[in-house]
Image (cartoon, rainbow, N blue to C red; front, side, top):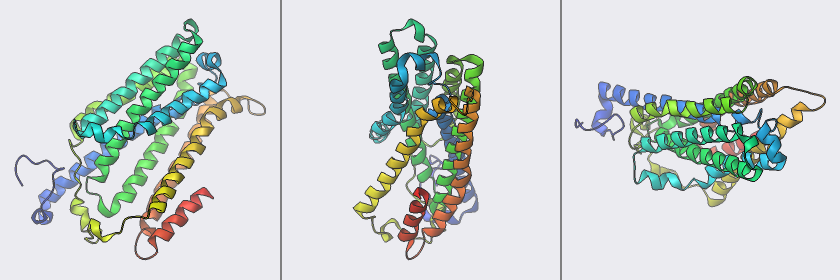
Length: 329
């Protein structure tokens, strides 16, 4: 191996039996996993979950009205979806870790601006306030698209092979924990420091992770399965036929509709839980939302393990479809 190569470089087959080289490669992929989990943790803790307990009850929320609050919630995931074509374009011009860091900085700046707009809401025109809140949330969603896509690229290219399902389920656990932490933290911080304080924390979290990204993530993702390819049985990419177009459309539709269900609840739960018969305070609403996220979290790892087990041998596609169907039921 030449001295210029990194732990993320392609490993020749002759090096796969070299103990120190294999350990060095494993250390690299675990470092990538740790940093990527940190990115997902902070992104989901500051995203929709953080503002859900208080935005409708806040002064800015009361000023712009319930319909506009719904649009503010919609701006974040919509911008994330619309920004999907950007990562490949940016990756052609800068390193993978740079793109992730740019996404984190955009998220931090968006939260800071969102908090400032909310703090001075009473001195702003309602129309300008509405546009500002929507625009800043959209900017945060764009930052999330860049950072999260970059982390997924890094993880899928860091050599997990047959264990990739478990890694992705661990990402789901992390996002659930992040959302639970954000919901509880958002409600409590709003109770302590009103609108600005939770958004200051939401701005600081991604900015704190950015230096780790720049020092620990690879500049590019290795497309080789590396050491773990042997654990998958040595099957090459060409052994598996491509999924039928209908299967791809059905899978994407399932993801889209599940997101619609969960994101659609965000603007509704907080005002509903304040009314009869609940009369919950903002911190109490945050705790309830955190419990929902924790329930999601505890099911993610078993679901990932079950998917890995089902996605082998004859009838794998049918078993995986049954898992998806069971989730909807």
